Length: 216
View (cartoon, rainbow, N blue to C red):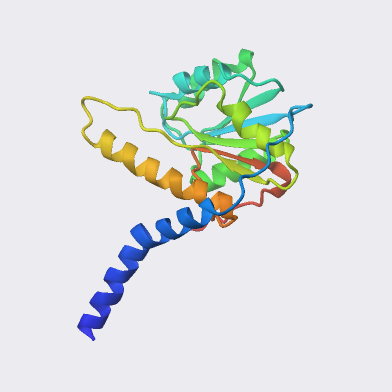
């Protein structure tokens, strides 16, 4: 029984990290490339939602990055900072004149509750989720939203890239892992089997969003 259990455990590890990625990548090669999405005529309104808990060190840079994104349509920025005990909400409030909205309550109920509360306040047709400690490339918002021109598309995930850092030896390993993860997601998307997305850069039609369970 011990040998059988060991064999099954080893097989599951190999299947998860080697066989499954190989299978989906090979299968995706035999799928026809999706047709080019027609040029967007009317860009939908977008709400950019950032859940930020005690992010005073990075939130100003995040907001400047977001405000500088290229997008032909209109988009709002909403920061939910529930439970933050630092200056996060004070810093966000300084961007109010530039159209940044803030939701804050003293009670912290977790990121899921913050996202649910934020989405309930949003008016955008497309919701873009992001964290406070990452940056978007200048054209990323347009690149995400253009896929919604296809009515069969409900959600779009971007590709995460890790910046190299001389003082952070793990950055190379992190970068390689996310290249690996992105290749799997791309292949899954090609064959219609993708089951998850990176919450740091993810867009969804608001009409398809369902409140997430707040249970841990």
